[in-house]
Image (cartoon, rainbow, N blue to C red; front, side, top):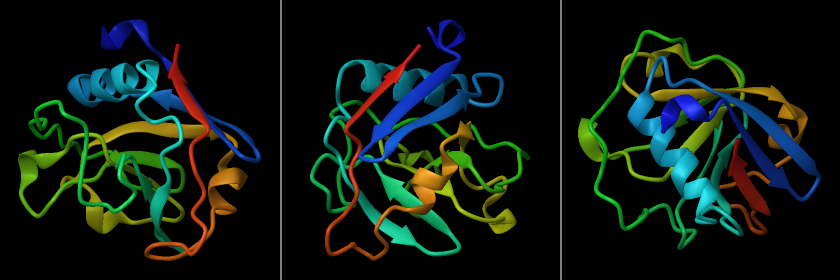
Length: 151
């Protein structure tokens, strides 16, 4: 399944964010995100943690940052791909094999995350919409994913 999907379109209130999927780096994570997206899992889900100069995190259906999908957690697919502006990576607990549905988009270089978090995509268009998400942990009025689909 991962090879059939090359792009993820994440619609925010301000418009579309286009993400190039990276099955070459993380085929299982790409498959998970694409499947959840096409099942409508991310529709209406908020960005519950948005830290200026660092990253925007979402993907928890409860909006608390404590939950994920009902699918089993994924085994890590860490790579040396650098965490730079626009990189999409999976969130996890302090344990490596705990990624599920939560992800983050990096605002600026965050190379200290390299080889510790699974990179699965890169924003190619619409990064200004990620930049404009309300900030906070959690934001007072969080931005949300209107809909997200893989193609």
